[in-house]
Image (cartoon, rainbow over the protein chains, first blue to last red):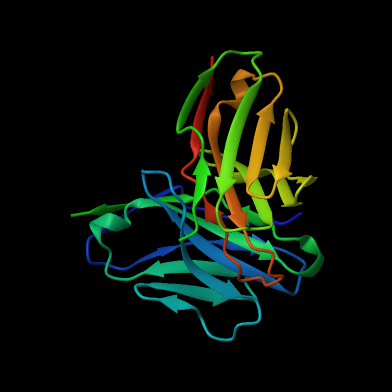
Length: 116
Length: 115
């Protein structure tokens, strides 16, 4: 079974500081994709960033970057220069390759709270 | 913009009622999903559909069924609602590209309370 683990149920960060949200995954597949989604209090899921298992470079999207360590099976999200609007739930997710269809498996989430 | 619309934001139902949660997407996506979200457990997949009338069980299908009669609409059915089905339900859709980087688009969620 595929499993995504987010060990930080909740985190605080000071505005303008950087924060790392942890994600580890367990899969025997060689080909897979990793996603991070943000869920504000309004409830919608917002796609943030993607990393493919064969990508050699860490993904970056604006203030978001993904610290991908394949051997450790970790895909941590780094948010630089935190803003108050970053306060939300954050979910790590994995899509498996080839015969596994299009299903996304999610972790338990981390609630990030940005302090002014 | 892709739009995934869930028919209700909030629902309160009685134990034993048959409950229908409706989801419609407007981007001609082949894949549609129903997830359930509970604190500390993240999103868990209930059912997945990759085509009209086609469905696959996810991780927690017990107590649920689904219907996909038209490509744009995917319904989640609770045959006899129970209090342990009180949760947030999220619908999602994605195109069938065969690519790993295909993102899923989510609806606003339906918060269901079974009393």
